[in-house]
Image 1: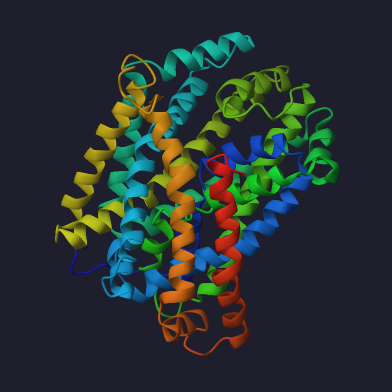
Image 2: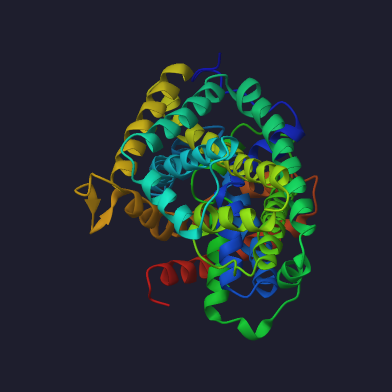
Length: 454
């Protein structure tokens, strides 16, 4: 079993891509992307989103890859090594803190997906829109049920993490990611077979640039950031397990492509199904847990078995996407504790799992009976979501770009990007221009937008 003395590596190139893509793919793709797209005009938003992924997401991802693989350490120590102990090291510590905070509330939402898998299996997903709204309200504010499901999800994550990199994270990713894609494709086919499904496809792929505003660009930038798990420490931590022969540029583009494909396929599930029954797919966060159960019921009501299978498959898809993300978030803290406190992997993972359960329980209870569990007038659950998404992620990405673009030794950047001179040197020149000037400017706009100044 791996400990702080032997960190391990991903064993295969496929393992690198599936594990890192799994860490990026999550509820941001399957849940957030469809409703944000619905709110911002469909295809026009997707075009802008893809541009943002390639122009900003991939370069920032490469920054984290450079830091992680060169340092071969947890995120905090990686920044410390490359910064020679200067204040830049705080960017690494912020990444570890961000991951720890996110997993607290993200685990709660992920637990909700398991409840909906269970409810679908038991045939409970029937009723009026008001019934679904009441069901979600009663469950999400219940003092025990959400915590039990969250603990189950953290327990599964713990079992993966303690087995290490190749036997745990890589092996689990090689199972979960193919299953995720199979579920996606099954659900896409079912959705496209609905009456008037073409309305959804048209909405998704026919751009209406009349609806594009400055806000659309900022939403696309923010979604790209959220979707790729940038500045959470996940990419940097996983890159520390990359072997030297891993091509960072190719890996970044492949991971970004998989991440974007999952988001678009999710749109092909949601839009045709919703528009076929006359529901607009722009109902915000409630889309998944309140709107879609009603959509599935009406869309497939004449085929009870199909409705049953679709409901189970969709929430199982959400659960798997959640699990792959939580594994990567858990690993950020586990590797940090293992290396900084010189703990064995089992001890570090156990500490992180307990922390996840405790913080997650308080977050869950803050939505119900524990109305005193608030910060700045928000339930702890909502505050952690706001604080990490609006402050930690933009600031972490901003300083990561400045760190790699302006501070890190140019030879290190050259060697990592060009694979020690074996790749085209033009890649390096383009990369440096982007991370020095373009990405920081874009990220600054995201930050100002998130705090309401733009």
